[in-house]
Image (tube, rainbow, N blue to C red; front, side):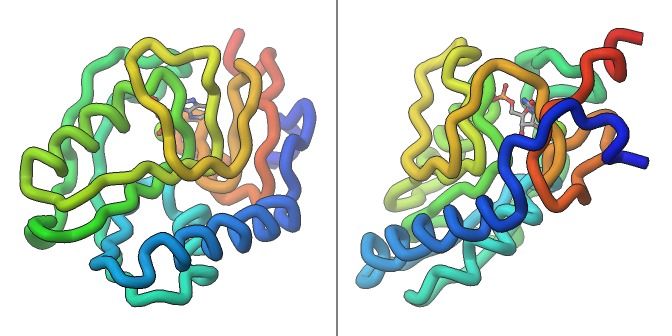
Length: 180
Ligand code: IMP
Ligand code: MG
């Protein structure tokens, strides 16, 4: 069972919902008179984006992209590929990218620059988690759920070898799971 691999729960389901309510309210105020498009980065965005958009009360469209930088490793390769692109143009939209975590920052930097180059009016980053210590490029998320120390976490969208995204909380993975 996935929960046997968890060393410590960092944020419960209730913690995350409460935080998404606050973030949703902030987004509602900021984008009330804008043309908001929330773009989720699959697959890690799913639980966070689903919770966040419930608390956005202004007009809002959604779309998805899938990019890959990690494979099944716990360390970033720095190689970002587009696996699934958006359904339509971002021209003129005020985009909020929804992502599970900002780690090295490489993925979000590449995607943000791509969307700006395609004519998005503005691009902001919303991530559930921010692992600031690990940053290797200049990337400051605008909307942050929680800042966390440098530990490998899973749950609420975050995976280890594609599993554990379904856990309803965020927890630290036991080291023995990936040190085998
Ligand atoms: P970045 O480009 O290094 O910022 O990588 C971002 C991606 O790495 C995220 O979308 C996650 O898929 C993955 N990632 C980074 N840290 C973790 C973690 O602690 N647990 C699970 N996935 C992670
Ligand atoms: Mg991942």
